[in-house]
Image (cartoon, rainbow, N blue to C red; front, top):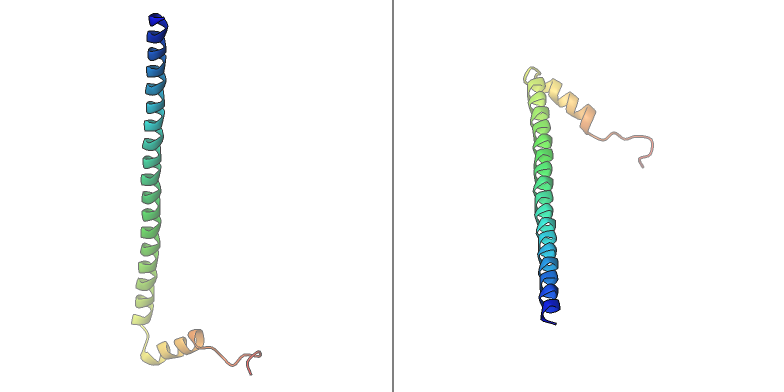
Length: 88
């Protein structure tokens, strides 16, 4: 009887170690996945910010060579809503 009890304890210990190993690997992988996701999100945000800065530089360079009347005409043409056909 004591031999069976010792074998049973050994099997339980082995199953416990295997379960602990699986849980450890699972949570480690989960943490690594979160870290990768955060890095990808930060890279994407930085890329968008770089594009926005480049667009701002392009607009500054474009308007630097224009006089005030040309800038006002461009703003009025591109950014001000016209009366349009659907307006009352």
